[in-house]
Amino acid sequence: MSNLFHDINPVEKDLQNILMVVENPSGYRGKIEYNKKLGAMILDRVSYSDLSYPVEYGFIPQSWNKYDNDPMDIMSLSSIHTFPGVLVNVRVLGMLKMEDSGELDHKVFGVADDDPYYNDVQELKDIDEHVLKTIEFYFANYKKLMKNKEVKILGWEDKNNAIDFVKDTLDEYKVKFNK
Image (tube, one colour):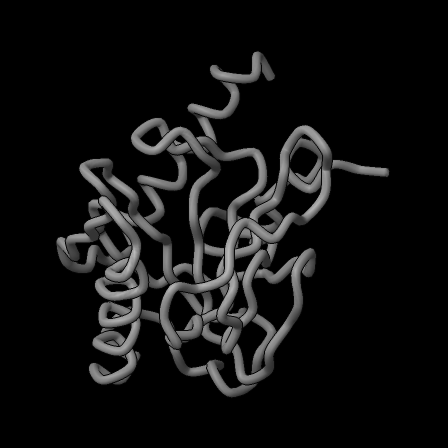
């Protein structure tokens, strides 16, 4: 059985199109995490609130975010709900900058590249402002009922800054795992 974290090259075309492993589909109220050692999806927790993911949410294979010691988080809009373990080719549009309990916890943002509903979406500015505010609201509030958890939204970065950050996390993976 292959390991979704170590065995999948996330770059099919270029860094504007990156593969995401879905952990939590849009509309889901739990928190599924991929266990890198077991190579399996595990229910980490049930949401402390009734908020559900407004996006498909997961990680970039072969990436490492040194700020939160985890694979790089990525989220994508899609006109359909997927399920844990699905690979989605994401067209990167930007990045939501966040701080989670004192750690930088940025999230790359894009759209499902093969989704015809998003054919004309090429930049962050092409996304309706209300959609971006809904995503911010979710991440600002999804941990509020948990003890000792505080999330701060630091704003959005454009596509070029997001791609640079992704490149850094791919390089960091190579260093951390001697690849």
